[in-house]
Image 1 (cartoon, rainbow, N blue to C red):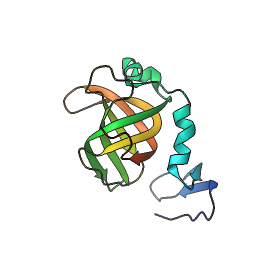
Image 2: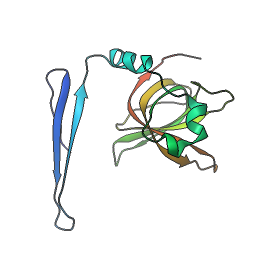
Image 3: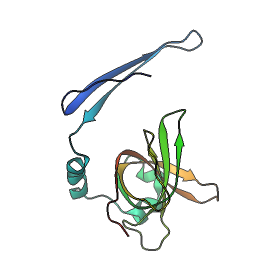
Length: 152
C-alpha cells in the first residue's frame, strides 16, 4: 500500500508495478484526477444525458460501459477492508417507473454509510449482478458519490 501526493487539481499519472516470486510481474498505468469540489465535477455529468434505471435494467449486459447516475436511499452498505472498497445497495429513483429499483454500487474506497442515507453515485454500468434473493440488478462502478443529495 502506498500514498501518492497531488499538490494541485488535475490529472496525476500513476504506474503500479507488482512482483512476486510466485506470480508474473505486472505493470498497470492509469490517471487519477484530483478536483477541488466534487459538486463542481458532478455538474457536467448531470448536464449530459444519462439513461435512467428502467432503460439500463432492461438489458444490463448491453449497457455495460455506459455512464450512469444512481440517486436514492441506501438499503445496505458493506465495507470490504481487504480490497479497500464499499459495496452499496441503493433504491434508485432516477428513471424508475415502479420501485424498488435496486442497484449495486461499488465504490473504490472505504466509506461508512447507513441504511436510509441518501446518495448520488456517478459512474459506469459494469454488469448484471445476482443478489442473494436471486434478483439480477445493475452493478455500477462509482467514480465518486455525493451524500445527502435529493433527500426523499
